[in-house]
Amino acid sequence: MTCRAHSQLTNLKHARYVCQNGRHHSKQWSCAAVKWLKREYNQTMATLRPRVTVSSYTSHYAGWMCIHGGEGNGDDPTGTYHGPLQMTSGWAGHNVDWNNVPMSEVFAIADAEARAHGYDYTWMHGQWPNTFPPCAGYFH
Image (cartoon, rainbow, N blue to C red; front, side):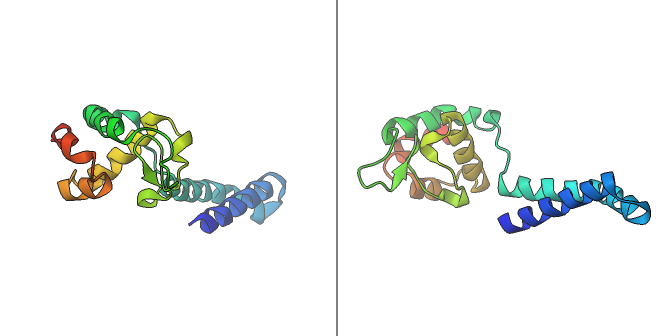
């Protein structure tokens, strides 16, 4: 997907250049193509980096704070888990540096994944086996 975005960006830059500096038919085509190339690139980037809003997790804020309270913040001694919810690198396909992302964004990402799984007890328990059970009541 990243290669596709790079290729799309290259095509978009080329079309913009030809639109500004080209002649006749190639200029016409390139100016028209800029719109759909830009839209295609933006859709690819939206897939690579889904927009997560802080308001998406606010109804479960107390639950995420409860899990965070049990997980702590920072790295675990083994170096496997990171950030306020102690997630692994690449957790649920998110390539995020969990230690350097605002807590609100970590909560929003976690809430988006939990919502995608229907806040299923088994799934949530699998993610945070020790800290989710006492916090489960916050996710009803």
